[in-house]
Length: 218
Image (cartoon, rainbow, N blue to C red):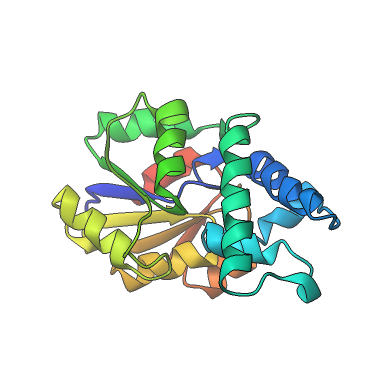
């Protein structure tokens, strides 16, 4: 089947945001006098949205309770990330060339991320604004986060493309499950935050080691 659209995850797929995510998370912990994490530890904290991240970064016996305590931690994280989101973030090598090739082939481009909508839009505008994104979805109120397929399904509808004509590309098991549940072909990237085993276990149809390898899936 000819693929007419590619729906991308953002963090760990298009952009290497790990350093800025870690800096914001460690600032939240530092403010509370709690131990900080090495940057690589944040690979396992991301993927479920900022609300989950704002809980996962805490020690197991100090995780904020639901309600005002968690709300405060999440608000602090968003405030810290808002001052750091462009300190070290960069597109992965090969992403600009991939996007150029997809545009040349008239493949529609979309993003579906669990990152908050405002930060998703800011990152796309700042780092990937030279390409014609037809849909940019972050985490939006009233829309369940991935792996629920609602965002991916809505993106395909906005693009006017049947789900089976879409590739869903991401770096985590959450992304693979999202694509599968949305009726799309889930392709896992091996340059992101998670590993090969997780991607395979959660339903990746295939794995790629360099962005241009995605062209073989069209």
